[in-house]
Image 1 (cartoon, helix red, strand yellow):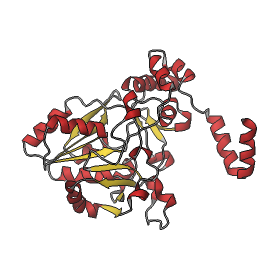
Image 2: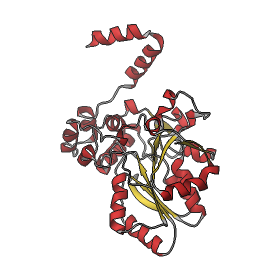
Image 3: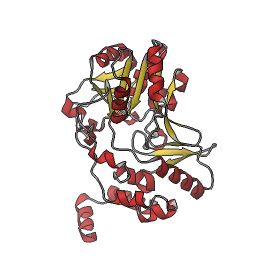
Image 4: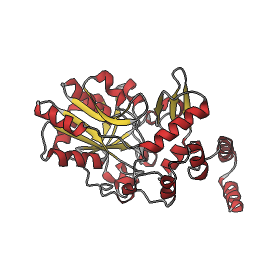
Length: 324
């Protein structure tokens, strides 16, 4: 099914359609705890628990970096022992780890897994953040890979210096461009046994990129984002009934709903340059990005976009053949 949060503020803080936020709010309103990935003050990413809806935005939004689980599994177990409801969100492998740690299922536990492409290392991300701050001449106070402020629902992001926010064009950014090409993931991500339809979570969430190909378009403002939502358990079915009033939901067949989400069926394809990047990760980031984290210069990016708008497809194809 596809879903869009009816809470406008929450929707705009979400990466896509706000499916996770809708589920999380339901748990928090009933005294539960919600676990997910969050930045700390140094932009390290780790799993934390929130028990107040006001803190939920910390867990919203994609973080394209490996999250440190710290003691989150122990804390989930403690909450469950106290009789509190828990929602745990993360990559499928993180949820599989939680289940293994707990040893048994609980009616008080709900899990949400992400359609995961793979995760880069925290070390690489921290080197990138320091480099970006040095390049811009100010420390990066906050970072968002998928912000709707500048580009709407897309892959564009933003960073903040404490006073002003700046757009991130993924094609022109070394860390982001390499991530999108699948060149910086953990090695195990390329043979991930969870990249299939046998999902670990009670829910699976991701972007619904297939809306353009629908024969009967749905009545959503898709520019604000649409979530793909899979319900994988009886617990998931029950909770979905309870949040129907908080979201616009349209059931769809599995083939349509999985369109554009390659990692629901396959792991990301291994790229040999990945090993070169991590073999040289101790080099200064400026050298690393020049040698390995290739990205488009902004001038050429805008030239290419202008050409796409002004030139007919036949002429563009002819120019591409001349280049090669």
